[in-house]
Amino acid sequence: MTDISYTQTSTRNRKTMGTNNELDAPSSTRRITKRMIILIILFSSFITIFATTIQIYLDYKTELKWLDQKIQQVESTQLSSLTASVWVVDAKLIQLQLQGLANIPDFEQLSITGVGITGWSIGKQTSTYVVTHEFPLLYNNLGKNLTIGTLKIVASLDAVYKRLVKKLVVILVNNAIKTFLVAIFIFYLFGRLITRHLSDIAGYVRDLKVANDIAPLKLKRAFSAPGKFDELDDVVEGINTMKKDITASFEAISQSEQRFQELFRSIPVSVIVINKNYEIIDINSFHLDNYANSFDTRDEYLGLNILTVPTVVEAGLVDVYKNALNKKPFIALGLSYIQRRDGKIFHYNFRSVPLMKNASVNGAIIIHEDITDLKTTERAAHFALVQAEKANQIKSDFLATMSHEFRTPLNAILGFSELIQGEYFGPLGSKNYTDYINDIHQSGEHLLALVNDILDISMIEAGKRAFVQENINVADIIKGCLDKMAPMAQQKSIHLSHNLPATLPTLYADKRSINQILFNILSNAVKFTGIDGAISLNATINKNKLIIIIKDNGIGIAPDQLFQVTEAFTQATPDPHLAQQGTGLGLTITKSLIDAQNGLFVIQSTKGVGTTVTITFPCPMPVKS
Image (tube, rainbow, N blue to C red; front, side, top):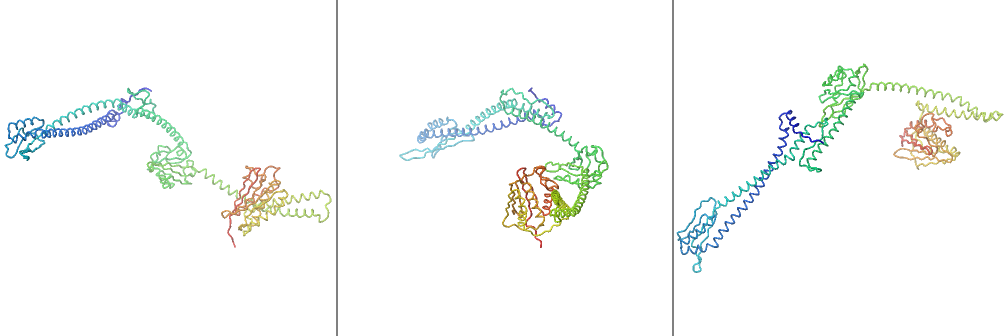
């Protein structure tokens, strides 16, 4: 990376931006140094004054102690000789002694006074601040102490104060010089090591543009140790990393913005963006291309109050659009008015999403989703459904009528074939006739079963089947159905078992329907269960519901066939070798009957494992008298 200096660039930018002192990089960076120097001087001065005060105070105490020691020394060494001289009134000797004491430093005045004594004095008090000591002159005469006078010593404190002041000045001057020199050195060192780099960093950041690909920041540092990083290096690395991340984020945002604009322009719905004053700030091309308004271009819409758009006012939608600035999304479905350019009625869903800023609504995105084609399709589908229901009703009526008409000739065929089989009017002759009449009778029975099933399903669908609701004993019906199925099960050596609770509640239902439901399911289980198979029937009561479970270990049903086994004319297995004789309507009728009794019908099956049928009836049902 090349060395970069931004001082000149930053200065040029500052000139163009005005005379704002905050943008004056050299001044602002040196201001930090100045503040630091001032704080250092203030702190150093405080420490100096505090330490000097303590030192002067201690020196003052020392001076006082030294002065007191000199006075005590006079008392111990000179007081007795002075007392003797005063006793004998030797004035010359007294003066000499006082003169000797006056030569002691800081002793300003000495005097002796007493009763009957003229008194002697040497020196004069000229100081403002003094310390005075008085010693009584005691003379022992014949074993009796007599006070013959008083020695007064006046010591000057002015000299002590002068010495202390002189010492204070020397200390302060020395510390001021040292503080000044340290401040100058720190000013130079801080400016050399930090502030000039801060100026470069500030200039780099100030001139940084995320859209411009400029070189990373690098400082010119003469005192930086190779391979070692300090705080400034961390700052530079952080700024370069931030620039890299911001550049990457800017590119991602630009790409996202580009994708959004492309989506905004191409999305096949009308999108309008408004501010909190209901003024349009953006509108997409789909709206301009498809909806007939008084304006044709985007610029004509921008700044327009959406509540004043003629089509909005004419359609009476002002209150709807006012809801766009709610704090929650607003939806209005199925609105319509003449709006499209092709003149067709425009059906649409209105949606608005608020744009939030600082917990307040700053605008909204309004979306008009065109559902005109959907409405047209819905009307066509409804018409087709009505027609299909009519056709289905006609079909059901036709099948019900025709099935009834089929029964008359079938009854004749079955009746006469039974007479012929019984040979009531003589033998038939050839054995072939017997075989033929048996085939005719079996085919008639099969056709009659088919007609009966078709008649049942048709009557159920047409709502013409009569249901006689009564209180029935479910346990008796279950046992009766099992007894009917026992011979068929014995033919295939199928083990038929059941497990019923001691008491089962009565059901208010159609007895014939319950019998038919159980018989159809059990017969299917026997049909599709192999030799030596097993079928079980269990009944339980759970949460006021009667649950009947019929389980077999037969051939099962393939997963792709399971969903359609209850459809009409559908065989449980498409394999012709496994398919059983039947109409394919048994489970269809069963499901219809269960639905008519407000029950639930569930089939679970695994190919090659078996099938489980679960029937659920609400229990107890209401009892009617």
